[in-house]
Length: 453
Image 1 (cartoon, one colour):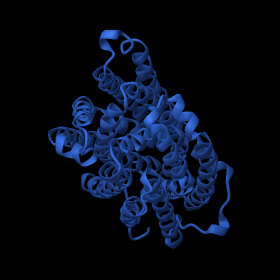
Image 2 (cartoon, rainbow, N blue to C red):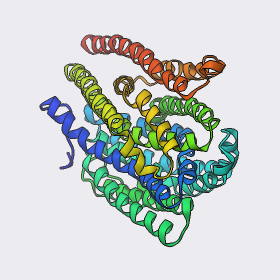
Image 3 (cartoon, rainbow, N blue to C red):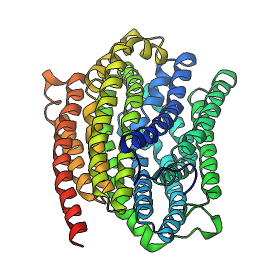
């Protein structure tokens, strides 16, 4: 085993999960700082309209990229299962299938994102005073999306192997470069949103180079050898079988967010600015919770591969308690300190700040329920089930929110932002309740099959 890796099938579980998760949290925070740095710099030097222009692209970017990022989840789960079962040949094939798959996904995204940016933004009813800047940001961002795909696939493989430190180190370097380039392009070269987009693109490419270099330097079965890249059919099928439902779920999830963003856009550019800033703050809470989800997925995956169902069960209890605590503490804190935090992004609009505070109250405070929902999904995927959690999430989150928009929100007296926000907590609660029940049933089935095998 590589010196930076953790053996998830042995040792004190609570301590391992905590120490494994912390670097993922820090890595996720640094990824968010890419976008946060964009918003802060344009907010300080370009104004609230530019903040809204950058923020309005978030749901669109997620919609387009989530399908392909789901494949990286499939790579991670596949590697975790193979490591737990001790199948080095399978690990080798999965790694050397994942890298060319990442390149193919990145190329497709580049073509779609660059050519379709303006059309998609118009369909979202992006305000006229921001659509030009939003289009420029998206087109430049997608020019570097191959780097983002390589990083996500590489980081997923490393985490499945127990190495969460390397992605953190690489993203730290890329994050520093991103901030410095933001300041250079916006302050010195006066490039506005084009400058922050270019800085993000360069940083993503740098992080991808570093992550591939780390895979090439490994001494175990996860070692990447460029000349051995090949789309091995059996590993590719498993990656797609697990990753495609995860990607579809993420994309459909984003569709509901796109519809909500379109509804927010209808309230004007000031509301968009406030929501964009608040959404960025929420992102820090979400990434901390999502880090626990990744830990739950990989610990469940390795122990499932090793048929160690005692640790699988303990992983579930620890992860659910952990994510609830993290979400509750950070969500409430983000609301308590909402005004000074929002002022960092929006120094020139008190009205936009008020919009942001309202959003944090309704979404960030109960965010822990979203965390439980996501961890439940991770536990199910760790057991090898990806289609059922996709169906449950699509129905409980995506379909429910779309129906909510076209029914409750369309009623004149309820046509306000608070009505949109309430749909979040209802959808989280319904979805995680069903998922936890499904997990309990699936766990018993898997354990019984192992005992009788």
